[in-house]
Length: 273
Image (cartoon, rainbow, N blue to C red; front, side):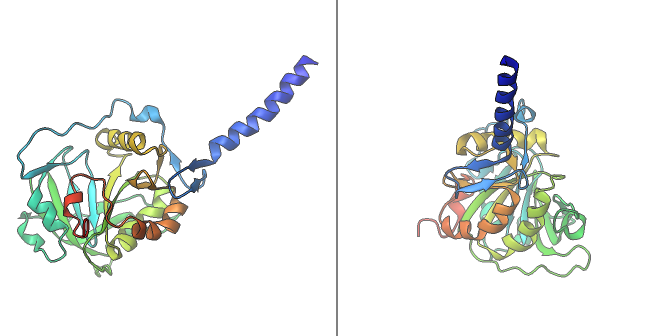
């Protein structure tokens, strides 16, 4: 009889545990319900011993970035090539100025394709997972590329550049199938036509540089260890491919004037107006 009771108890508990593991709700973050169909859950153990380096005291004209981010704005991207590299303030300010002459910010260099998660079987996969540009300049540990192009035809991507009003931190992984749904849409379609700055941290290939940054954001903003996700602040975060596709446009409208990335916040033209 005892064996029967024990087995019956197990039969009840196991389904509850499975359901709890599959359905992950990010309370307070737009009431977004995330299922296993929307997100790649990242093991916390994989993030251990990968803490990002702390910013060091430096010249007031420089801004040190955490990890190795890619900063996307309209039809351009700023690539931080070295972990914790310092970017001149005037360079970052000009990068976010739609009227600035970007060619004067560094030494001319070849524009190289920027990779993103690409899986034709699960989402739109443009140009084999690459974003191409027409121009580029290089500085000490960073590159700015602009004039976003379709890699196969060289045709300019439709862009509507206006002053940025908000910024979000986007975590993704090259090879993640759910990121492959959001990445091409985000970089080719959404960012070029919305007043948003997206600070991207790729945590699969750039694990050593960016995984610690991811863990810090998850701990600080109370989200889950899953990609893709984009964080604006504690009240505005979206986890999972379907929620990002469905809710990001509304989120940008609701976060005008919000930017919790200290390196970028001072340069958003509409903040405080």
